[in-house]
Image (cartoon, rainbow, N blue to C red; front, side, top):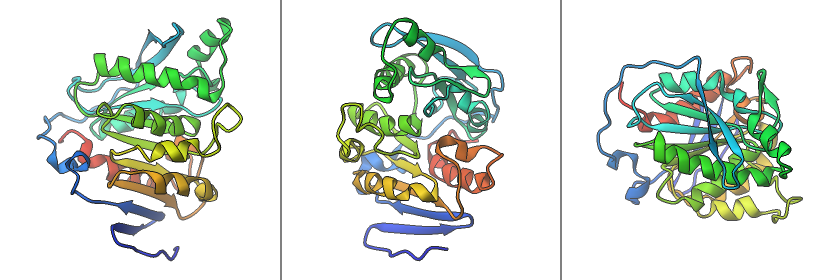
Length: 280
């Protein structure tokens, strides 16, 4: 187990399977989950066969998404964004488990991606057919369009943004840009992935300074050097960085049952999400 130093305002929690560093304060009511009104009560259920929909991005490209709407639209909802070269199929195993924890979920295809779990990235195919660029940075408009569409049509309660790898970095950027719309953010393996795409080598770290909502970050042990500056920059007084005790997987794949430390990763995620879930 790692030795850590606890400073004022920083709570370090050592849990089986890893280290969780949290900075918590309830002085700022915007960060205090306890200040939220009482949540409705729903019976836990899950969606194993999602409904697929499309809606337009800002440039008209069709974004394809899978709906895991297990509860009424007043329940908290998590918007799930995938990693590089993958698709919304990244969340076939994860989304139903989030349902059981008390959340609706919607997984989108961004235009930068390919295939995962035999699910082809339809948004990427549409963008390529239209001759649009498909670098990581080009997917920012898709996530923004998804935030707007989902907020307008499916998320009438707590709204949470979740990203994996490059999209976790964009999730932090867009949490800052959508202040007042997003209630919490989860970033799996964020990093400075955009220096060769017209952004500075510290773009994500700089933008993270504007993240004021509860934030959960996690990564492989070997990714800590890149994640630490981003985590430290986050302005929120309620933030958590979970690092497993042994090497894990990149991005949201850390939660796959095939990952040896997935149980501990789920424990950390659920600890963060529990105050935001519907009562069960």
